[in-house]
Image 1 (tube, rainbow, N blue to C red):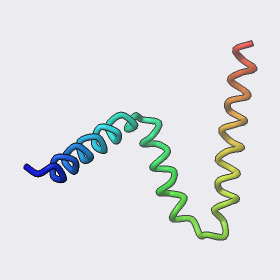
Image 2 (tube, helix red, strand yellow):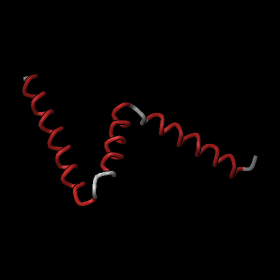
Image 3 (cartoon, rainbow, N blue to C red):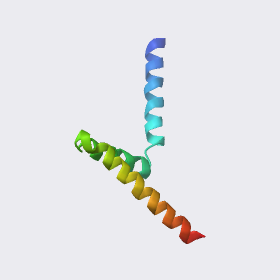
Image 4 (cartoon, rainbow, N blue to C red):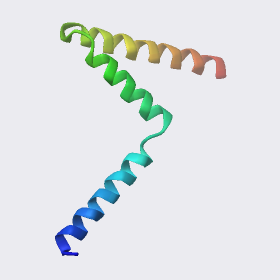
Length: 68
């Protein structure tokens, strides 16, 4: 096996490991949201992203208040 082939094989192994390491339920959820966002008309995406951020921020704040 040539050095170039070994390097390519090693690169593929490392890339697969990286995908496995970042493939938890939160990463998958984020990828799902991104896929759904791509289906929203381009002119509305910023509004949808703002709404998602606002919703998460509101929920996080309400959880923080309950724990105090």
